[in-house]
Every structure is written in structure tokens, then in C-alpha cells.
Amino acid sequence: MEKNKFFAWPQSILIGLAALGGTLSLSWIMPIKPSLFELGSTNAVDASPEKLLAKPQTQKQIEYFKLAMLATWQKEARGKGLYHTVPKTFFGKTINSAKLSSEHKVIALTFDDGPWPGYTAQILDILKKNQVKGTFFVVGQMLQTYPHLGKRIVDEGHTIANHTWHHWYHYFNKQAAAFEIDRTSNLIYETTGVKTTLFRPPGGKLHNGLAAYARSKNYTVVMWSADSIDYKRQSPSTLIDRVMGQSTPGGIVLMHDGGGNRSNTVAALPTMIKKYQEQGYRFVTIPELLELKEKHQQVASTKK
Image (tube, rainbow, N blue to C red; front, side):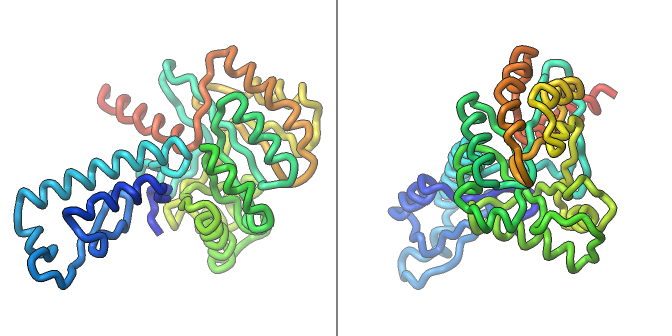
């Protein structure tokens, strides 16, 4: 499983690869990773890959084509939420916010415990109406029950991430933790075509074996800096005041689209988005936030 990319091939890229058939046979072009193609061999007498690769000009054209197609795929996939680079800086790390320069007034909205009938779709409707992208930490057994909602999350450009299979809080040995996390990631891939390396432990528990296993597999463990505490079913105005009072640029907001009655979260979300926008905030997904954080760290290091 690739550790640093969300990877799914859009149809347009496959069509583009087919166009190469005039020069090369698709039988010896196979996408292995977003940044790597491997050339095999055929039995053609006059146009074998070995002979083609022996010509520097032909090899140069092949490399140019691969880079061009990769760039096109990345651009399209970013727009659909299918591709995100998680910087290596954050492999196996735990983060709860990003300290950014003043010009990056961004906030990341995250939603846990779904997909859930009713509430997930309502939240997606609100995000779509306001042109906001979020990050959804899904529970495996819920995704298994409501796969269409998982597909919709990805199709509408949001980031989908791992929140274990059962959402249990107790201690897990390595084998049990592997089941909870690996099974969920596999289902996310089977359902949406996305390979996620983002993980959030249920209840934010960092010392029950789950986070340790996730970090050992190079997941980024994502916590939060602003907690809505919407699971207590407080009034929409209370949720809004709590979140806004805890928010700072580069922050991560915790809300829930599943796990129970989330009608107050749904009711609070439009006003919350409006208040953020009035304060000059821009909404980002967790992978986008990590990219900004890495760039900020690089700039800061050059000034030392």
C-alpha cells in the first residue's frame, strides 16, 4: 500500500494513456504508482520495448508523455478529492493544528463517526452549497452499510479518512489494532478508490494501541484544536460560540456527522461557515493544511 498518496485513476487519464498506442503497446504500460510507470516487454519483432528504449529520443518522448499525463491526472484528481500528497514530514506524526504565517488564515472542518443516514447527506448539501471542502473520518462498519455516502464524500471533492472499524475505546494489541485500521482503509479503497494515510482514533485516545499502530504504518494521526462537543447535543448557538471561540488560523475543528442525533450540528453549520468567512477564513482539507504547514516550516527554517 502506497504510504504518501491518495491514488485513484480517473477515466480521462486512462483514455489519455490509450492515445499512446500509436507509439507503444498498452500491453507493456502499467501504472504502478502515481509517480512511477514500469515498462515490460512484448514479443513484437520490430517494435519491442527493448528496441524502442534503446533510442534516446524515443525514451525522452516517453518520459515527457508520462510526466505530462501525471500532471494532468494530479490536477483533475485534486479537484475531485482523489489525490492528495501528505508530506513526508508528517509520516508517523500526530498533529492537532498548523502554525502558519498571518497570510494563511485557513481552517479545516472535520467530521467523525459517519457515514450516517440523514445527517451526512445534509452536511454534504451544506458544504456543497457554500463551496466548502471538509475531511470525513469514517467508521468502517458504517461505510460498509452506507457505501453510497462514502462515494459521495469523495465525488464531491472532500477528503475521506480512517476512524477504525468499530469505534471502540478499549486497549488494542497490535493484531487487533491492525484489524481495526487496515480493514477500514481497505474498505475505503474498495468503495471509493482512495488510499488514505490519515487516521483519527475514536475519542481522541492516543494510548490504547490504535495510534501507535497507525504511526508505525506511517499514518498521520489527526487530532483537533477546536472541539464542538456536539455529541452533548447542545444548542446550535452554543456549538457555534464554542467553536469560534477556540478557532485560530491553521486550526482543526472537530464535529460529527454520525454516532447519534446530529441535528444541532446540521443546524449550526451554515452560520458557522458564514462567521468564518466574515472573519476572512478560507476552508481547507487536512492534506491541504499539512502542505501549508510544511511550506511554512521550510520558509521558517531558511530564516534561521
